[in-house]
Structures are given as C-alpha cells and as structure tokens.
Image (tube, rainbow, N blue to C red; front, side, top):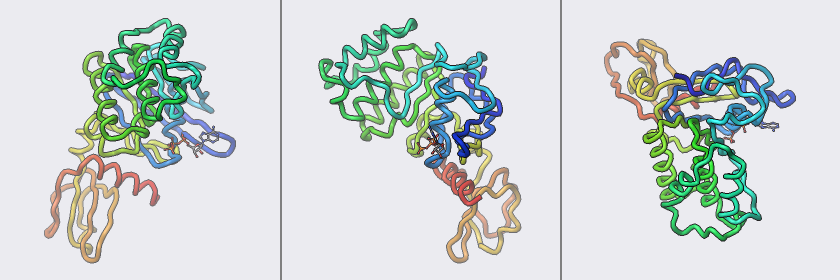
Length: 281
Ligand SMILES: Nc1ncnc2c1ncn2[C@@H]1O[C@H](COP(=O)(O)OP(=O)(O)OP(=O)(O)O)[C@@H](O)[C@H]1O
C-alpha cells in the first residue's frame, strides 16, 4: 500500500515555485530518502505532506486520506526548526505534548530517550544543544505512535555518534512497527545504510524516484576513452572527463564497446550524478 501519495502537487510563494507538479507514490514500511540541493523544495514537500502548508494546486494523501489543513493522526512531523517551547523543562515538554495528543505513548518517548542517559529532565528546552533538541523532538514525534514519520534533516545537528544513535532509533521503529519514514538529508553516505527508496527533487520537481536496489541494478558507472562515448548503449545520465578518459553514469546500459569498463554505482555517486545532471540542465 502507498503511505504517501501526491498528485500534481505544487506550491508557489509569489513568483517562486518551491514544489512543482510532483506526483509520487511512496511505499508503506519503507525508509525514503528525500534528497536535493539547497532550495530544491524538500522542506516544502514535507510541510505539504504534514498539512502545515496548503498546496497551490494538487493534493496529498496519507494512507489514502486527503491531507487538509493539519497533520494526519497517523503521521508525525519533525520540522527543520524543531517545534519545542524553550521555557519548558524537558519533562514539562513531554507532558505538554502528551496532553495535546490523543494517540500517545509516554512509554515510546522513554524508549527513544533511553539511550540518552545524560539528558537532564529538569533542564530548560531552550538551554539544550541543537543535537539534544533534535533527539527530544524525535522522541516526542515517536510518542504519537506514527505510522508515517516525516523528518526534515533529522541528522543535520548531530555528531557522528548521535547520528548513529538517531538512525538506530528510527530503524528500530521501522523494524518493530513497520513505520514508513520520509527523511530529508544532505548526508548521502548515511542514507545508503537506511534508505530503501530515494526521491530526488530539483527546482521543486521530481528528478529521480525509485527503490534503491532497483536503481542500483539499473545503472552502471562506466569508464572509457573520451572519443568512444557515442558507441555507448543506454541513457547517459551524467558524464565527466579528465583528458582522454570519460566517466559516465548510464541507465539501462547494453554491451560495452572496446576499451570501456563498468561496475555497479554506489548510491552516493548515483545521487550525486543525478544532482549534477539536474544542475547542469
Ligand atoms: N515561506 C516561504 N516564503 C517564500 N519562499 C519560500 C518559503 N519557503 C520556501 N521558499 C522558497 O522555496 C524554495 C524551496 O525551499 P525549501 O526550503 O523547500 O528547499 P529545501 O530543499 O528544503 O532547501 P534546504 O536544503 O536549503 O533546506 C526556495 O527557493 C525557498 O527560498
């Protein structure tokens, strides 16, 4: 089943188009990496899915129900600016969010915070470091017992150990509860470990949308002589060269001409080549 479906979804701010004509079907129970350059529309896409921002046109459905003016009860949303009250203590914040949600598991919050033994429950939320705030906000999001987690750059404020911890906490939820996760990130290296699916936006439009294993199987990284590119069978996504050698990312490549070698790409290089191709137009 589809967890998140958008139909011709668009959002403009004045003359600036943030999301343009996006039609996607994001599968249930998967971790979807939302990638794209700065200003590509990732945050707007997530805010539209969270019902926080109204589309200019098009629609969003979560588990088949249209999103209109509010967060779907089965979804949790972690915005880039973590929505926490700075003057509340950690415990007050947990109680306040619990009181605001009918669907709520304090136990789930505690479970998500269990690894974070140094967290002072009496400390004011405003005094916490950005990384700790992120972990608290994520734990509160999990307290809503979501079937869909919308996470806007959940890893950006975290050091490598905390990133690992947060990813584990997310993956545990996926494994135990079958939660669908859509997470935006610029950290392409980390995504390989967790993502089943990639959605790449550029200038608000979808440039790549697919299952990671299928994408990796459909593409090859080719290296060969610069003057032999015309003989390559398949769709060249991006090419670059140094002197007499060319390196190409090719989709659905056929038999290779003499002098060319190919191998399966890494997810990071595949996404980077799509980003370069989108940028170069
Ligand atoms: N509230 C707003 N008012 C006006 N323009 C906006 C608003 N929100 C986003 N935009 C514009 O829409 C475009 C997409 O922005 P968005 O924040 O969604 O991109 P992003 O991919 O999340 O970027 P980043 O990786 O830098 O966080 C940008 O050009 C941005 O300036």
